[in-house]
Image 1 (cartoon, rainbow, N blue to C red):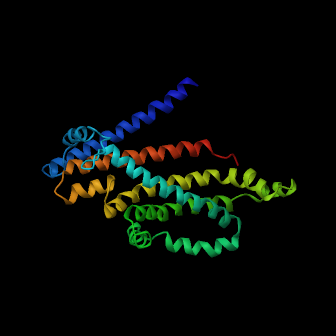
Image 2 (cartoon, rainbow, N blue to C red; image 1 turned 90 degrees about the vertical axis):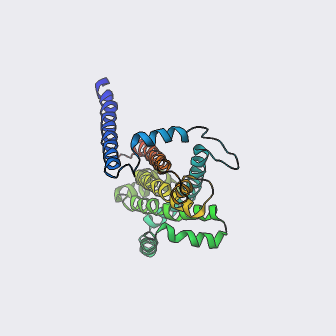
Length: 261
């Protein structure tokens, strides 16, 4: 048992380190081939250490990288949370009623592929406020994976499970809490996992358009105002690492709530 546990820790760590080493090697190769137009990993690391100095500084003239990160996470949390509050109940309704599924599904399939950048001007017209427009964009773009996966999970409930509820005279509420939610929970978590990834990806585009505080605007500012390429790479690394951590959180939740069919 102990050996199995060690293997579950050691081998994923080995694979992760190997993957990062390959990525670092490719990065260094690209840097050499471009004549250091793309900064090397070492040069980027030196700038990374500078960026991490006073990360929580929140002066009017300067915001630390930690302050920028929290600002971005706050917008993502609000947009993702509102999207989930809409997507999960609507997914229950669509998945449990074929007529409503046939009515709403074409609407979802039409709206789902729309680019995040197309939603921002609409949000700006509605709210007259750039940060709120960014949250609106995250809300719209992040709800579709959760909605689709939730409706699929509910629609996949076996007839035997439904018959059990009828045989025991379950009320609607008891059927929802004892059968519908437990069975569809893995699908819901999968949808949430996909949605948080979309939300975190969209925030960069949203902050580039809206300005203010945040990692997205930090990338825009450094890229188009004669800033540092190293700082852009630092921001990309931070965005990637935070995205990985968010995905891991929902992966753990997915395993925790796996329902034995």
